[in-house]
Amino acid sequence: MTQNTPLDIAIIGTGFGGLGMAMQLKKAGIDNFALLEKADSVGGTWRDNTYPGAACDVQSHLYSFSFEPKSDWTRKFGLQPEIRAYLEGCASKYQLQRHIHFNQEVTAADFDADAGLWRLQTATGDRFLTRILVTATGQLNQPAYPHLDGLQRFQGHAFHSARWDHRHDLSDKRVAVIGTGASAIQFVPQILPKVRELKLFQRSGAWVIPKPDRPFSGFEQYLFNHYPVLDRLYRTQIYWRNESRALAFTRFGFLLNVFKWQAKHLAKKHVRDPDKRRKLIPDYPVGCKRVLIANDWYQAIDQDHLALITDGIDHIDERGVVTTDGQHHEVDTLIYGTGFKATDFLSPITITGLNGQSLNDAWQDGAEAYKGMNVAGFPNLFMLYGPNTNLAHSSIVFMLESQIRYVMQCVRLLQDPGLHYIDVKAERQRDYVSGLQHQLSHSVWESGCDSWYKTASGRNTNNWPGFTFSFRLMTSKLDLQDYHLQPVPARG
Image 1: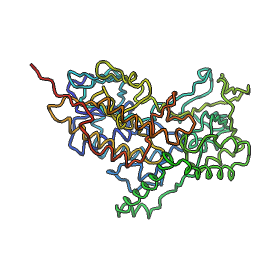
Image 2 (image 1 turned 180 degrees about the vertical axis):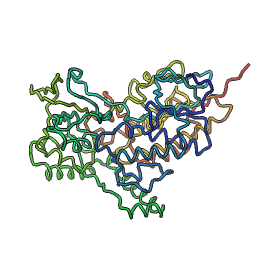
Image 3 (image 1 turned 45 degrees about the horizontal axis):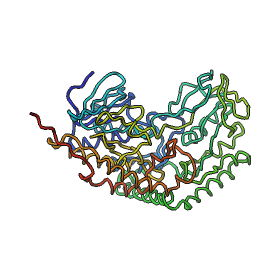
């Protein structure tokens, strides 16, 4: 299929970013847009991650659209099925289904400067034309597999936690889990009662603190539903409580030591084996990597049929895992809890801008974007949840709404029939990124550890080094001085 009539806007992805953008377009009366989705349903990461125990680490009332509140959340921290259902409900309420092209994974996007259009191609061979391109692919959408010799030799069953195989019965199985990140701390306690034994391979420990989670009572749900002001007040107090933590991550790292005390206290309380307890406690400053929250992690580690292994993995063979000390760990199932290619923004899409410039070439030293959205030389391209917009202390949905408001200003500007395209000035982008990296250099993320926030060269391409309200203020008003405004070429 080749779409000959150009769209006003094409959106890649139907997670929080893509759906939120589409919802605002509908509210503004803009209808000539499409969402291109690689899968057969909406939901983004909440569609893909269905592993046992999948849940959010941001409170439900804040991890939802401010303009589309949900008063009947069942828990303080939403579980994956409920969050996915919320997104599906948003798509249905705003009648977005007729705008969505499912099973259309975008493989390439090329900007035609003469026409002022992006030309998109999908894996099916279909083509789309659009004036404005909005990417909402997220930072956690491409699973990262471990680079280990012999992965293909394993004759048991293997899968990544983000591609959980629910058909595979783990009952009475010998299971190896590689990785102890945010996903593993959720699914390991869930599968542990089923398996015969579990070998947990840990490269580095994580600071794990309590999760202040519980179900909402029927009375609380009644109050939220019948007195919306209470719902909004509850959300507001969550926001400001979370926001205060930004100071610890970005300025005063010593404040995070309370998390260190909590983690050590819980480990001592729930883990009997001193060797296990010693292996669990990280050797890097708290906050340098993602701080994780859970209420059953240490209790799971304490179980006798869970072995916590910190020796490096040498290779995988047909029957299991061989560690660097020469020990062979025979297992039936391998589960990769190794996270995502978080620094590979927009991967694997090939994006080409002005003068044939590849986005990969523009980002050879690490992904960067003006206000996390625009890259010089790539006109009318806007990224949601782009470089340096990730958070360690609050809700990415708040950041997305700030970006969507900014993009809407650009959409209105581009409705001018005399304007061909806008392109952020290279010097504006350079100054912005330089200032941002300077701020990051004083953050806890630069205290001496590797993390998924950084590229292999050590550049932090993911995190926002400040308050979310400062980001909203920064994106509240479009400054035309930041952009080259290319008029429609004269036809003669």
